[in-house]
Amino acid sequence: MYGKGLRALSISTVVVMALALALVFFYAPLEAQEGFLQKIFYVHVPLAIVALGGFMLGGVFAILHLRTRDARWDMRSYVAIHMSLIFGLGALITGSIWAKGSWGHWWVWNEPTLVSFLIIFLLYATYQPLRFAIEDPERQARYASVFAITAGAFVPLNYIAVNLATAYVHPRVFSSTSNLPASMAFTLFVSLLAMALLYATLCKYELTAKHTRAQLRAARRLLEQRSPGGARTSQRRTRSAAPSVYPAPAPGRMAGGPL
Amino acid sequence: MSASAPQTQPPPVAMQRAEGVSHEPPRTSTVIGALLRKELLVELRTLESVPGMSLFAVTTFVVFHFALNRNSIDGDEAAGILWVTLLFAAMLGINRLFVADADQGGFDGFLIAPVERSALLLAKAGTLLAYLLVLEIVAVPAFALLLLAPPISQALPALVAVLLLGDLGVAAIGTLVAALAVRTRARDLLGPLLALPLLVPIVIGAARASSPLLVLSHPGGPPGRWMLLLGLYDLVFGLIAYALFEFLLED
Image (tube, rainbow over all chains, first blue to last red; front, side):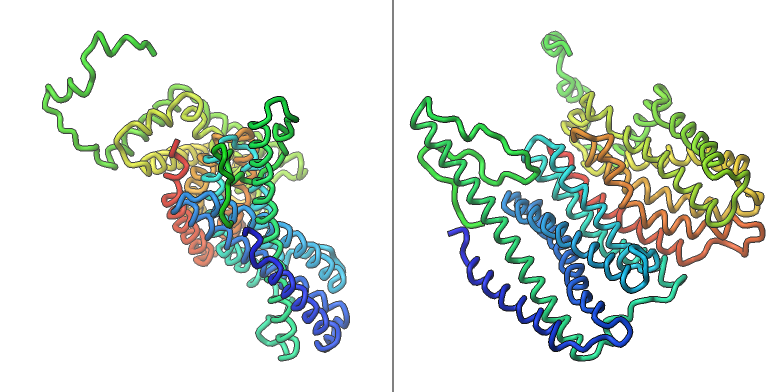
């Protein structure tokens, strides 16, 4: 069973997400200066935190891949980084909207968190081109892991450097999260939990989909082997940078095992 | 090469045994020295990287003069232009660093030798560092001559310290990225794309540290905070490159 726990995970994501949205709109107080606009805080901050956490998680999976040489860790690392890129794009867009509404500009350079996030995003944007430019699957996985570990270590370092570069020149514009009122902090916490669950669910879906597709391809190949002259459907190569975890199976045996 | 050569001559191993040479693997420092010597010799004989890098830097200063429409610059602007130029010139060297090894079997030759894998990293980083030093010996005086408003002589000792710290970081990151990118299909594109974001903290540290040095009456040495940032970043990425480099050499 490769999709094990997917249903429970999906349902809990929907429930917690609904709870988080209800808290955002009906429980958390309106911010005195920014008013309703400040609600985007409960989307933007969790998106950014989950994306950064996902990038570092991809690095941890990459370490496990280099340690164990198990291709499934590479697949997990790929999915974690892929999903974090999507969440990161969301964080950049919501941050930009917030900046426009709050300060009148789509982009501000004196907000170190946003700036360091952009640099990290630009670095990770090369992850898929890198994978795509290496033909040999084993070497692709190894090089991608080296990249994922380097970039994972870069995440906190870059944040420190950019913070140093801005914090001493300009005053911080955002109030730090440590002095939030309790109701706002609680709402933020639930939103963060919902976003983390969403991330986990989407990652699990992607892993399951990749696994299913690999199994389907293996089954098709098996079918072709048994009926020579059959439709050559599995010859079609899809253009994707994703790692292929399951190579062609031995005849009579399906590739399997949970991801 | 010719396949019949080993049959007519005694194999080198037997020759060594006959002469009583020990079969201990060579010490890593010896290996690094030999590799570094080889790299510098190849560069001296082919002149593939360093002249191009230096010429690129000088040309870029000329381009900046026209692009900015300024005859002389100082402070933040001067530091920024100096570091961006050095970085892009370094990128030319980074892109070429492993090309000969990947295309002409240098990696295979190194891998069959009974030596530490990390020796290649240290030798290549040393090579890149040497390239950068020669580049700066050309580019910094050219920058002072062509663009910089205040005289460079008083700032020079502190600027050399900043340049050295910056170079160490560029060498560590550049070597790792070069090894990562060289055996990909789009290596000329991927190298800079991977390296530039990773080098942003170096640019922050180095440009901030050198900008107070490049004003008319600068107060003392470079700011300690930025030197510390550069040093820490060099150290961390030196360790990361050291830990990960051998995974790039396995086949």
